[in-house]
Image (cartoon, rainbow, N blue to C red; front, side, top):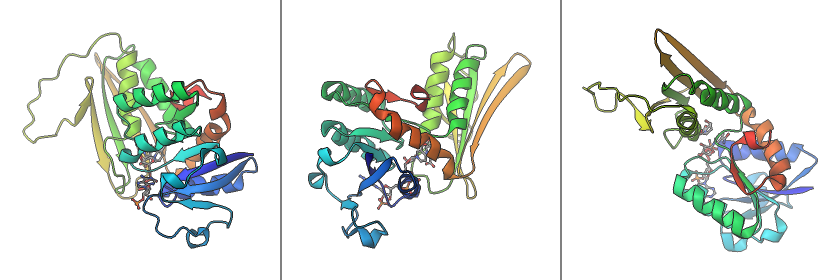
Length: 259
Ligand SMILES: NC(=O)C1=CN([C@@H]2O[C@H](COP(=O)(O)OP(=O)(O)OC[C@H]3O[C@@H](n4cnc5c(N)ncnc54)[C@H](OP(=O)(O)O)[C@@H]3O)[C@@H](O)[C@H]2O)C=CC1
Ligand SMILES: O=C(O)C1=N[C@H](C(=O)O)C[C@H](O)C1
């Protein structure tokens, strides 16, 4: 039985994750964490009596927990992952917003503590494939732009998936794109930019999580698109991550490492 804690348990993804964990015989939900949770009785959060509700790291004993599932907010991703690693808990992090420096520090902590973990910019298989195909396409198409589209409640922009896609495009291409000399007559019209890849973030009601990568070449173009119409799309990937996090080597980024 894999003992799991869910951080960010009152959020959209935290609630979905709890349902998936409770339905799965090989997982046991042992705890939930949110520093803003005032009432620590499980009943008040519709949780079984044996689930511990924590609002402070001091209450948590790493010996009681195998896997720390995190769907919180960008500023919590680093301290939460650090806490998990330092307490011998395998982190499975879905939260977006870790910087490259934070990631390097966490990978060093994981190595020192000999605790493995997974950071997945996206648990959806369609997004994992989109990122893989985008890296491949970048070998042939140097010029690319990303449009990510999400629900209006998303707290960060651009999405973690979009940044990761841009990193993969940057790693996959053989030469740097030539700078585009368009004058922005309305500031921000060309979007944000990661290593020569413009990223445009759309926030609209009705959307869940979607991404399009547009490649342009001489007289031709390639568009790759993925859509998460429901947060269920993330649950299979999360399930496999919880099952396999013990087997990975160090703190890895991307679900493709375990599929
Ligand atoms: N990797 C993937 O496949 C996916 C990743 N995500 C990512 O997961 C994250 C959460 O998304 P979503 O559930 O939609 O967001 P929500 O805003 O619905 O939920 C976030 C929850 O985290 C809580 N929270 C805030 N600070 C902390 C903290 N320090 N520790 C624990 N909990 C905290 C919030 O509480 P309060 O509101 O009280 O502050 C809130 O309940 C985002 O970063 C998102 O990008 C989302 C979908 C898929
Ligand atoms: O906030 C979301 O909803 C999502 N966040 C992740 C991200 O930032 O990439 C994954 C997915 O896009 C859904």
